[in-house]
Image (cartoon, rainbow, N blue to C red; front, top):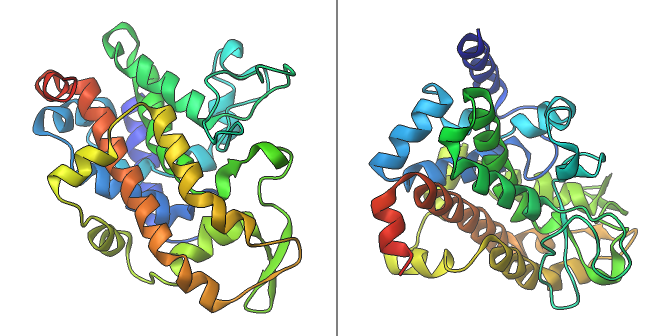
Length: 284
């Protein structure tokens, strides 16, 4: 039954992959991240991923967490979510480093923390044999999606404005929108009007040594790297501003870098989890 449901869901996602864009990076961006990652999985990792996904490619489930967010929240342990639900964004401290908890270390308030959830998915997948098939599937789906979300510039809450995730109103092409949606959608489909596989080919331009450098450190180091790279563009747009085509063009390189890095880091995380030979080589 589960396999049949998963395959049916995969077919539906492939059918709508390039339509109804919403949430972090939209379908196009998330599929691009998954495609880049797929291209950098080792044979051993690809075999394990295929077993867990029942042959469904990662691009087909890359936006599952947006489409079935409430259903996923209902299956997480309460200690994971503080009863609030899993996050697709993350907050950083004054040094731009993500927190490794769901409660702020100083004032105790609840933190939105996609980095924390992705980290726990990685920890669970490292012990995949201890979990039933449905849990392994869910954790892999979650990690695939959250790695993309973590690298979306519109998904970072900086310490000075933690109640504002870029949802303040702006306009683009004379249409009202939000800063959040500019990054979720327009930054991918406007300057890069291709298929997700085309965008993946354009973004996937690093050498092996460059990829190794990008993937150094922990997922919290990656989150800090994203926050550092994206802070300037976050601060140069204010409530009510008009987003110009020039502004989009000026930040297209950042879009490509974040999509690319997300794909490389997702592949690295999965290779470290599922391929012992790769893990030994990259743990030195």
